[in-house]
Length: 279
Image 1: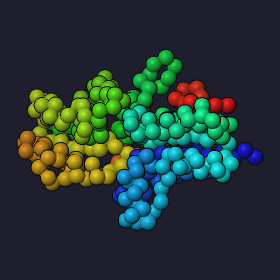
Image 2: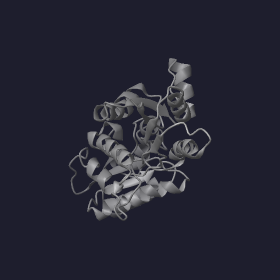
Image 3: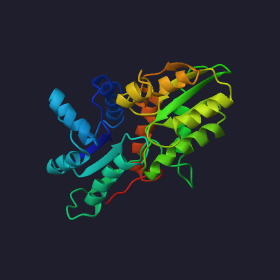
Image 4: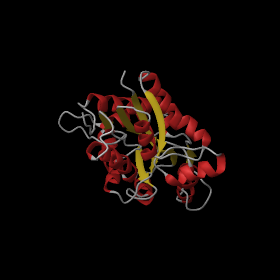
């Protein structure tokens, strides 16, 4: 029988509890849905990989090492599913190595396909709307809020063009009629300052901070919920809001887990999913 494998690639985390609750949980969901496949783990963050090796003696493959290992072991059908939120720099790392295997001299696999991240399609043509599906999945973890309360999600952000996904997410949230939900990013647009201005304009008194990140790691515990004066919590308190924090990554949300499984299924079908493959 042809050897088949799935590589589940995330940015990674040095938080062992976050790894178990947010990354391993998705990996286990994929294993349960695809029992005939070997499922492997890989991280795109070299810093996280080095820290885990130095601190805990744990070795995690990079995306390149994981795929190379499958080639060495004789696998012929490989699916690579990222757990990234947007198709940014980390996703580009994975796509680059997959393209090299498709078009490079190796021609090692009969088939190699990359799935899409959480936010990719916006419902064009016959493709799904990943934003609407993600918003629906988020409703499973949202508490009931009163008229002067709001939920603020923190994304990562950055300079990569794909990070406009967070602004698009805010627009999709508004189109869904969820006027009590706002999105900001740590390192890009929309900034927290613009969200604070919106909260004041709507006379919001209480804010619930939630991460829009796979793992509740360093950014969540420090940049979002930390006690330093530049954390989101501290800035919101200084601006006059009562603040609660929700310290759970998206990977703990079972409906988000299901979306990653569906994106993998889409890639395998090569119909609705984003995929590049060579037969």
